[in-house]
Amino acid sequence: MAIHSTILKLTGLSESQVRERLQEISMPIDCTVSYVTVPGAVHVQLAVSAGSKSDAALAVEETAERITAALDDYVFARDDEQLNETVAALLTKRGLTMAAAESCTGGLIMKWLTDLPGSSRYFVGGVVSYSNEMKINLLGVPAQVLDSYGAVSEQTARAMAEGICRVTGASLGLGVTGIAGPDGATPGKPVGLVFIALAAGDRVWCKGHIFPGQRGGVRAGAANTALHMARRFLSAAGANKSIDTNRK
Image 1: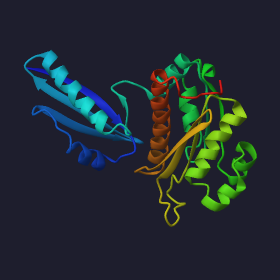
Image 2: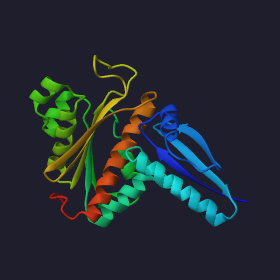
Image 3: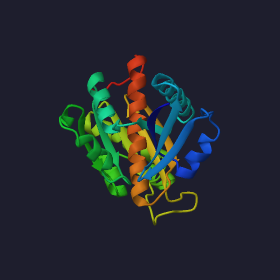
Image 4: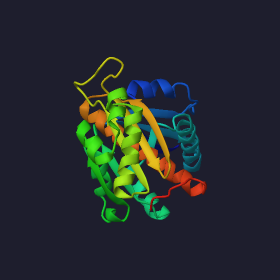
């Protein structure tokens, strides 16, 4: 018998939520699934035993593909893949640059992107805009947006992403705002709520998430998801030339 395994890294779901989702996905009879929770992510190891190494590898690959297709919003990396390295490589390949406007993540996205040597080729800069005054004065977030929707809102995240592109001239801009906890929750806005926006040219995408865990887990989960959002966009940009990225 031969055994082959792979690890899928998911973010934005708790371990119990991942287990529940995987119950709905068909698995090989001889597939063993194990879980490891780390701040901001759940690592799922799939191991299959079969009569030959090639059969085991095929079964693992097919299972991993089914999981990734079903949980595409959450599977951000596999095995030894590092998300910051993947995003850096895609930015470099596309000849694009990135900037970030972070609130609750406190510069974590910028740290991960600049942990790599040569990051000046694709990362131009960013702002940690915790206060409303910083959001208004540095990023140009309209005061009426903050008054009407609050700092933790889709509207603010969108304005932050657009603002950081405008300030830095970057091709892509990430805007992240949320409640990392343990305090700060308000009616309708629980701890773990984070809005993540990606601006590219004249288009902006934004999605709200509720991340599980303590403060560090929420922040890491938000940073993982922001870079995953950028990776998915950059991967699509390679196949879809109509995607507009005016700022370069």
